[in-house]
Length: 139
Image (cartoon, rainbow, N blue to C red):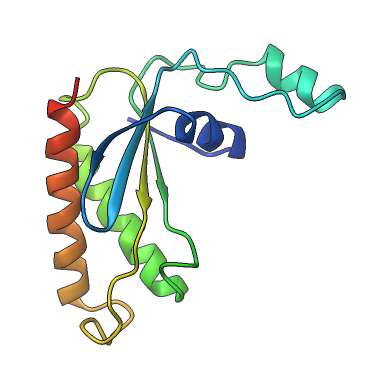
């Protein structure tokens, strides 16, 4: 499993379809042959257009945890770690494509007081597990 690293990679995948949703997360998918959007004339756009976004034919995964929904860096990092850990178990069940797991709602700070508690990690892990199972069944 490869990890998404560049902004054009994330943008290309987010332009694809949402294949699964849970209360807090959404799973986006796009084909590996996706091209970056042309932002305008210039050398950067030409270079990006000539170079493939996904050079290796494999499952590509990215985790997107915006500051809007997880204010503390500790929380964002804990959520991303759970996403990557759970998704590693599903890499053989997914076809070769690019995926992004996106946090779309905040976890209640009244319920999860600590920025990185075991209770929060378990809740994230359970929900990401359900998301990945639903995504594996999606057409």
